[in-house]
Length: 475
Image (cartoon, rainbow, N blue to C red; front, top):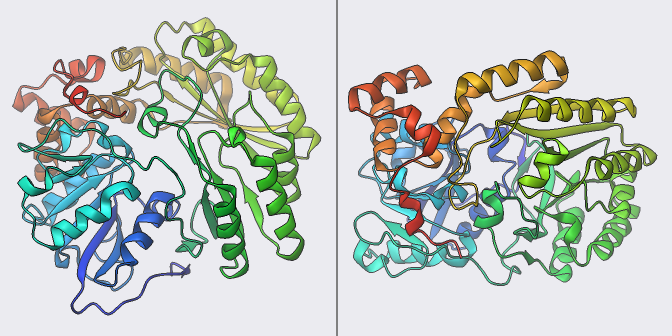
């Protein structure tokens, strides 16, 4: 049982049926704020019935209808490896003749998607997705749709500018579909701000969601009050790339505190910056029972400055002492290895930093993964490090950090690197592989690439020579 609340129920007959597909597990899908917003936004229109799918089932959560029964299929493309699952579903269910839209941050390079979809929506849904759907409901041709902002159509409009709302006070449902199976538990997700004011050279999110925009305090307060009182959520998650920068954070905290006097709910801040920590926010998190904070130091101090994340280890250690003061005893650290110019000394310094945090009395978990160059970032032309060297570095980290270390592994990063800076040939390779192999492992992709004359190592290391994504403008 999914134990969901605020699921949209409608009569199916006479509706324009939209399948909203998140190509991963249910737990990840229900934790995604974008999916929640799009689901409720589309269902505001009584002519439309939008139902949800995940990678685990070909039938919708709402009515059990098969994916092939829908008039329009929308895929959320959050991570590069989602391309493999999307291609697998499309090929296995023979959905090639179904109208399809793919949206999400990884659409900033739409070229690997050309062989599996009709339309790529590049930007934020509130800006123009409803207009696109309305035009499609009216039977508009691809040529007529080409004038819509942010819409990439293979062979029709390929030089596209990302679309986004200039003001962030857009639709934000207070009674959102949710489940205790979410990574946040039964939580109301509050979209506090988008974009980021920092200058991390490796970050795609900063560029895809630029410029930095804030949601008004009035709207956040209204949504939080309605969600907590009418929705009876067990938690409120404050979603932002840079929460501490929110200009009215102290007032937002006071509103949450006031609500917590009458209602019992937790406050969650999924990720915080070590160099801009609000003590008032930490107090609120501790008061609501939060025991774990996630911080991303990325690497050692010297290399951190070189990749644009400019704060010293001392700042992080001081923040840890502040966390301890407020009773927060667990820390999750996000780290990268394989960065340009990285040496074993840099990794030793990163391990030393982790040990210093442990010595302060924290239970520490470290998630460490290889650096993957992303398109539309200042580091898009950097090389993905040789997997043999990456394996040696990962072996060192495992030896030094032991059980507190987790990783997605070198193979996944290698595939991410291929897809992130790929082109049409990479999309065709993925599609041909999923057609032949039920479970497309890296070994299977390699065999198919060899038959197609594609050098995977070149794509992983440097990306497509054509750099086709540069035809897409994010700002």
